[in-house]
Image 1: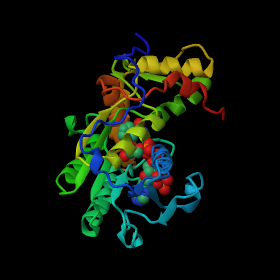
Image 2: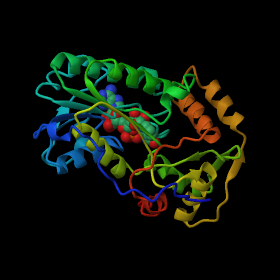
Image 3: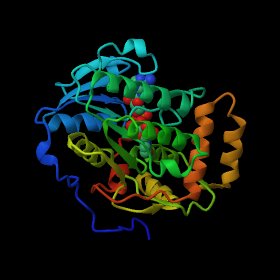
Length: 312
Ligand SMILES: NC(=O)c1ccc[n+]([C@@H]2O[C@H](COP(=O)([O-])OP(=O)(O)OC[C@H]3O[C@@H](n4cnc5c(N)ncnc54)[C@H](OP(=O)(O)O)[C@@H]3O)[C@@H](O)[C@H]2O)c1
């Protein structure tokens, strides 16, 4: 069943919007999370459509790869005083700002999702309302409101609910995993460190960041409120994703098998001193047990993405 395609692979197509005729011609967008895996593609997509983009960045150097026309606004959403006039003259806020899902980024003791995603996005939302912004787009996660006991998902669900209740026009994306989430697996396969937790028969349909960015830009340009669950064109079991990583690394499909309770116990044990790692372990354990499948959009295939990754 590897790479099963649920419907004919949909090339990215615009969200049908009967009110598209009312779209403003010159939209000014603030992108929060612009230096992240998704945010960089969103900035590029918006720029290529001729929108005026301001990127909220904490560190100027990380914005070096953004299109030349992008206005860089330095600020940290967890320190409201650094935000200054970042929201002035903005029509739409697009936020994919969040604590990273990458275990290697930010170190061992990084704060958790309720300490970053919730306060940072609620600050932006409050400021957007005050500044008279018309529309707020937030990148949540697939099935975020279905698992209130999982901190990573619950934090996203809390922000999404605040966005819906803000009185602004809104767009909420509920994406399946991004391709970049599986980047590290290729290196782990090469180093024979790949781990499979439980039977890993739970399924998902990951989406390429550039395909998702296209959907994000449609939501920015739309004039209606939408909640958009979105995934990629192929459905894989978690085990099949590990096999794809081995194929990309050109090594035999060999993994170390572990029961999911190892993740659960490890996460529980480091909760007090490494909150983000604990929450990541909890979410990863859930992903190994539950399907996370969303309606397919986009065209890029995971095998191509993994094969084309630069060797480290
Ligand atoms: N990756 C996935 O598979 C996946 C799937 C579904 C949903 N999501 C959600 O989608 C969103 C984007 O994911 P991603 O993989 O693109 O994340 P990412 O690569 O970790 O990027 C996160 C972005 O947020 C910024 N940020 C964090 N704290 C900030 C703060 N206090 N002030 C200003 N900016 C701040 C980061 O800036 P710096 O560069 O300065 O750190 C970075 O630009 C996240 O909320 C994630 O949970 C991800």
